Length: 297
Image (tube, rainbow, N blue to C red; front, side, top):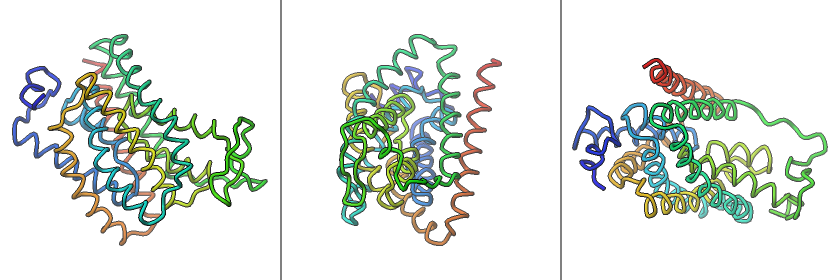
């Protein structure tokens, strides 16, 4: 399905058309790539609501096209982090097992929501869910993990087997707990199109005990198979993916992430956290404003 077909079908409700629309999408990808490079998190939690709010793209198409873009961005990032030894393979495997199932269930849930709420209410509901996700992301990034009194992480204390050793210094973790976390992240990916990195990274640090660098690399090892399966379901099965939108975003984000990484080296970590939270809150305010507009129309 090309961009002209999408416009005719009403999947893209935008005053921009043709090459201008493609350039605008690439600019959005560039901005989100810069954000990802600076703050070290996937920009998926921003991409889907911005596609809906700024371009009027139907949420089902925005979710699928965003996931398609993540396949490219997460693949390049995963290869780089694996070479640096930043991927905890066993942790990624257990999380991805749940996440792959979750993204399939999430896609089914998204279809059910669209049928249940219908045209007048589906978009406001999605706006509301994205506001909640954005506020949760801001909270997770700004908070500092609480210290464990017994030296054990949450999934080591969870009495739910089987128990697995993730690394020599990370022993007796609940495999079921890891898969459940992956299932939740996958559901979010299927429903909201978020790559999940902004949620997985703090979870891996606080709940599993990985270092920040290994948490980022491991999260990419979860996001990549989740995005591939999600795109296969949404694109091949249901036609919810536009390669034109996805490639426009990918071209911009590929350049942007390099720019963001360059900027990141020149900013203090504490300042990075404050800037990120401010950016997410501004984005949440934009989506909330659009939500109010939808409700009063």
